[in-house]
Length: 399
Image 1 (cartoon, rainbow, N blue to C red):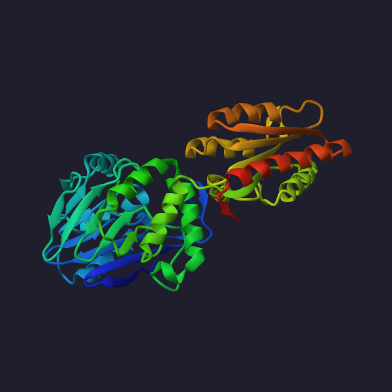
Image 2: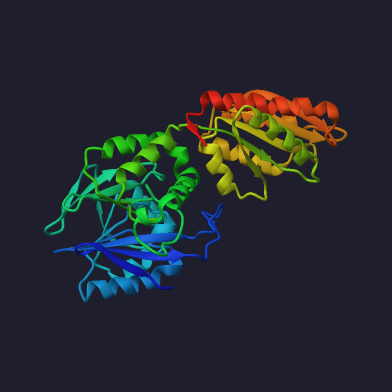
């Protein structure tokens, strides 16, 4: 697997691995666009490596480091975050550079020891500690729970660069450029989905971290996934918007339909939503991967769940989506329930129970028996209208 190296500041190298093999990020999120693992090498009087790569790409990284170092040793290895997509190369880096000093936090040290069970030299940092490496110095800033408890970032005052690890990252491989501006709206879309999937459960910590980092003048953000960020203000403002979140004026309809009857009912619900001038976002599961569903739910003020009865329960994929809402803390949304069955429909009661965990406000319910009947149609349209009105009231961003 080739690596791609880019010197974006004098003697600061971005080393990129484009991963197009991994189908599910964190074994959960579909990434058809792939993902990058970015490491950074700083060469001064001392040499510094920031983060690593997934273990299968370890040899390629070590070979490139040797090429860039040109016979010099590696002095410091900054591990911002111990998750194996960044630290998988840790054992090989320690083996190749046995004298290197690992820079980490007390929590990070425990994580690395538990993951790899090897001995290494280390320095434990505290908040705002500084480390001189020659003409440059590093400033370490703790930002715990973004998205693990060990996370910190490094600021390079001389170059106004922030090495941010997972924060401000995105999905997608780098094909034509190393910079965000060259990917335009695609970068925003991939960043939003990445935020929703990976960071959104810790939105309150995002706000605290941005406030903490606001005293530093940053020209470039160097994340561990995705391109270098030059439009820093734009990306920071997007993170603040997604963290509140600011709701889009939309109704997200998440549904499953085993034999088409519930899907037919959804058409009338959409009609009601559109009658009040609101966009209906249809998410049929499992056909629509959950990575996209969670992205849309994150900033949706109004949601309709459509579920057939399955073995005296709600269809399992709908239960999974609601549980992901609980995990990601998408709480307090207005919700409509559309359920179906034949002889003993129980999906509605099961969904109602699950929604208690996300503090949902139930705006309306419609249950159909088998196919859609004439008497069902006005109820279905009204369900859509009701949720559409809520979306209009709460959505500050028109879509």
